[in-house]
Image 1 (cartoon, protein in one colour):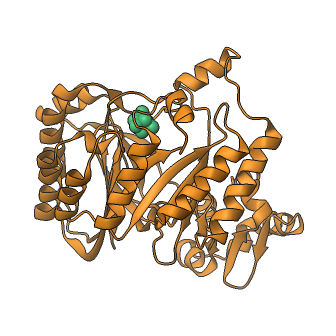
Image 2 (image 1 turned 120 degrees about the vertical axis):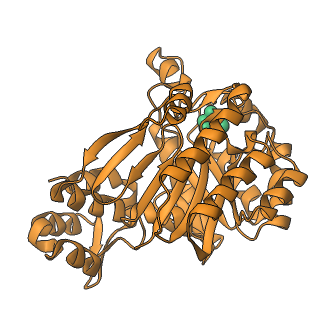
Image 3 (image 1 turned 45 degrees about the vertical axis):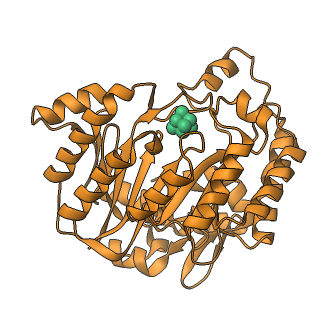
Length: 373
Ligand code: SF4
């Protein structure tokens, strides 16, 4: 049995207006004690299971120095048994790195870099609170392309004041940069973000539903036309460059989450670490368990999650995998749901798999709700 490791670096230079992820801005004095605590947690939770992928995310992992990231990676190397072709991703913010930093990351063994570009328009970047310019982003992505074989960029559409032409220009820029992987998300108003508050006050000029749909249609049509397969609802990759780490989340893989706010899943339960950097450091230093039980995975929960997570992928639900895991055919549980969704053109069913159609991808939430028991 293999597993994945997720390391959370909960620091950012400044909070972006759309973001409600657990991260704290401007706390450089905590970086070193945090890395020290993280290495203790890595030591405490070490297992012999082969590690398929490691993902250092955040927050902004690249606010850390190379020496600090080196220490984290070296600790994992020392205590865990890594698969020979382990995928090691680091998330990077273009406002925190340069070419030299990227080269050093590569020399640590990082073989995949995920760059938070979000938009190729300076006016929009400023309005969402990003700390970098378009020029910074293009320079960093170009540098990354010359150093890494596997470069991903994140972008967001349906931003306030964004036009369809902005989205078209962003896709043109992606084409020119020729990255291997694109994650493209429609803006979601997350509770706790500044945009959520502005929206509640009626002060966020979001695109209309029609424009939102036009942007979605453009992105999901154009990226495949450029050779990026839509392998998950919001993720597009050139062949062979799908994120193995994220595919694990959608394919019932076990993962160990380390650091403040990180979640772990081992098929039996889901735990989460305390969402407070100082409490995390103190807890680890005092030998306390910093995690709490979120959920015990009953058979019912396992069945539901298996289905709606697998359906996020273009490959959908693997019937044999379902049968093997739950010792029953999927129709025995969801027969009428599957028939109705297929009749509505939301899923396609064959002998091996059950997948979302294009229409199903657009209306994913309606489909997922049907798989709740
Ligand atoms: S979007 Fe990324 S960089 Fe911005 S505040 Fe959130 S975690 Fe930090």
